[in-house]
Length: 117
Image (tube, rainbow, N blue to C red; front, side):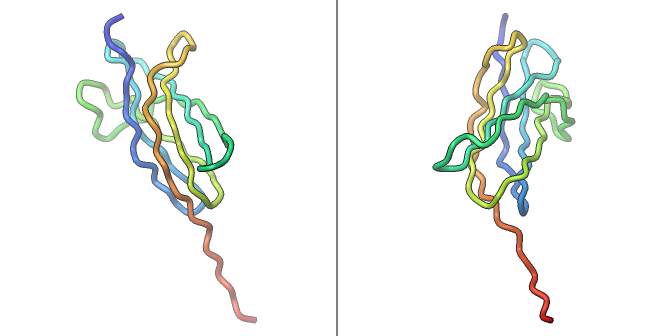
């Protein structure tokens, strides 16, 4: 096979209690969606979550040379803290492909409003 699966991992978008992770994953030879394994690990702590997603979300501006439906778009509900989100392409035969890297994100605790009696 010519070419290696590749992609990108965007900077995570934190919101109160959630994190949205986006990016791309594709194989330069085939226009089929790739699966991506994402791990979420608190900094200084054990692995919290592993999720496999299909990179088939529509990207408004696709990466050069690929179609629009190779986007990663998933959200995680997380407690307050700093987390590392890492992504690895899953090969069609089930093996592990190239890493898309890791991104760190800090989730803020929800604000509370106190109502006077």
